[in-house]
Length: 255
Length: 256
Image 1 (cartoon, each protein chain N blue to C red):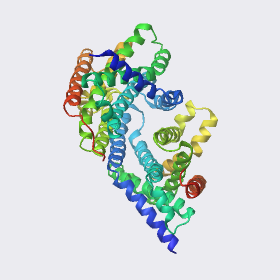
Image 2 (cartoon, helix red, strand yellow):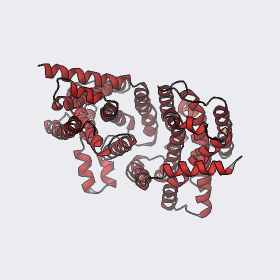
Image 3 (spheres, each protein chain N blue to C red):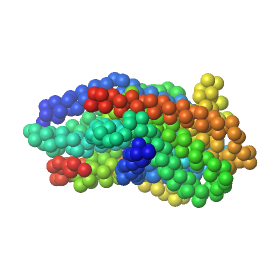
Image 4 (cartoon, chains in turn blue, purple):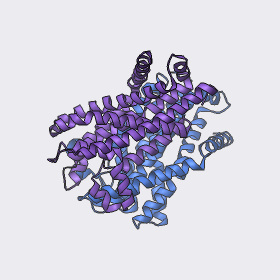
């Protein structure tokens, strides 16, 4: 694997992603508004969960990671749609290296954009410590890798139709977020919703994060399943992504 | 007369583009129905009151907001793909083009939210009432007003990805600072009084609360309807002026 090629492409992509500090600040404001307005008000209404505000805060961090990671996946498809991918494929860089670069780019963008929200949530919940902070970042990286791998794998659809890809990704994202324990504990769901939630990797991401920082363990799905599920998702979608990129990615239809 | 007919033709073309954008329609339907049937039901289990009944009219209004705001995306596409330049070559005044887009936002909002309302009636039969029917023209008016907000976003964002970022921010502020998702009593416990005033005068709060009156015993007051009309007209006028500015500039300079 050629690290020089990876780092040059990575530098180029990162410069593009961080060219506006204003937009990064905007995403933090968006997070703060969600937490301090929506989260504060809803937590006044919730009576079944003690300290729902912190539960919601940790869920919101996972949600932000999901959004950033799926943006990274969509960015890959959009670059194909706009013709940039064809140029990159013409460069002397292997498919494997290219996939690793895309992944590293997504992970770095995710870490930078979620650092302040993570710190705020941990400080507010009184759970801030270096070990909690690092384990939170580790869990979020695992979630991000899994989601990015999934979105890049789905990009194979975009090579048939960009519109169908957009529709599937948007609908899938909405369902993954709602049928998960990001915003509510599994004990509040009926059996059908709980069943759907148990087969959703985001549930285990949120679960693992809450477990890692020591939030109320009675609200968690499982003490043991979260880490294996998340690792399986990350490794599985990574291989799937590499497979698709090396076999199918050549260009994309214009509509 | 021909101006009016051409205005309606442009409105029809613009509106049909909204419903032909399959990914967007699928996204809006999935988001709103999953909000209604998943989020609403689950939160109901976590609160001391029937949150589902409260939430369903809120989802209808949130759907109306998203559908009405989409006019900004269509105008941006029209400007970048030369459709707006084509409209300007038609026997149609700049005012008529601006009005056509505002009207299209209103129709998009009312058709989409009307469909959501039909779904909502199945789960909340109490919503079937005269006051709900009475709300329809006001929902159309608010949708046109929200089309005006889309025009303001268009003007200040310059279109492209920035439009989406601005639209997301505006959507978050309008919905977050309203009683669409939570009652005013909960907002008052958390927010300072000046924010509460914004929440009260937010047209989304007014229309959502008016829609909820059919669930309660008290009737809709004339003053609340007048307030909805005034705030909607204000947003509509602002949006009309923004679109007028955009299309006038396009006519003179050939680009925005």
